[in-house]
Length: 444
Image 1 (cartoon, helix red, strand yellow):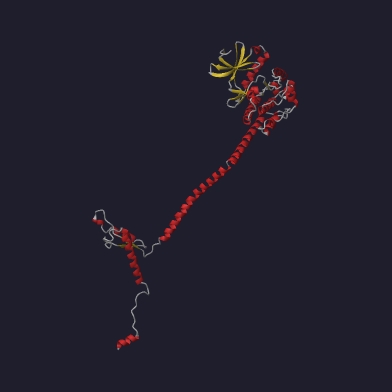
Image 2 (cartoon, one colour):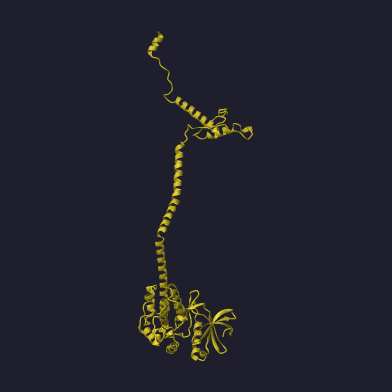
């Protein structure tokens, strides 16, 4: 079969086989893509029931369009052999994944939400899968769940459950070791009794799958289908958390409700079950975040406190530095204001000569006079011109010019003080009066 072309699909390699036929990886020569090519076996092609199941699966899958349901691309017949073309999935079946052990809680809840969403989409189209089991569930490399094999699916109003039950049991796989691997172990109580089925039957089977994902074990085991049926109809399995300590109690409740014997007390819709799974997923993530934050606080408590103190110190420095600077500036201003007294009407400003470097004699002796005129406009200043009073001498030629101004200012202040003391009331000298004795002496 390898290398053979069926219609416009070139067979590349086998992917798996089942009771109805074989699945190959093939290349679509028209579109240049790889697909999964499902061929009926020679025996199944001669079986009207197998042909009916094959065509029914094609019709049902073609009516469903959902990201978690395997997509049907094409169906046809080549040289009397029926074939079905579906999307090629890369990953592994859930059955193979469970064989390695329980699925971690995070991945378990993600996949459970995907499967519940796919079942809700199928049930909304009145499609009951009737064969939900790990072998018919696929996990892609991106962690997405896909529901496969709608071969025994039916529309809810078909009413052919008894005949389909007989065919399903005939295809069941039971090992001599006593652990059931086939379809019987995932049947609902009403399915085992041959009663009319509805969407709630898929939810019981889904509950069995969740139990197996969480624990790695079947909830109902037995050496024969009869023993398994007895467990499904009458026994309550241990809680998943008893076999896997990482399972939260709420998950136990969800599985217990899905495995109710009476479908009236079971989940009534996949949407309801999906809502509980999503709620549990959110609570689990929130709890894990809180625990991680608490652990980080305990582990890094001291450094965190030191870091907090450092941040507080830097913040105080940033706030206090401008305030301290403003206080220093204000103090200097106040000190300067106290050091420099306010001007009064007796203050004198000494104006020295200006050196005319323009080369124009017009400006000789005019700059100081012009400045004096301007300064006289102030009621607090008395300008004094010192022109020709401080001629350079051998003594002051080497002194800086401000020394001469300082001495001049001192002399002016001294002169002003002397004038003020001379004119003070009561300080003027009075003529000396002669006594009577002196007058008599003078007459004599």
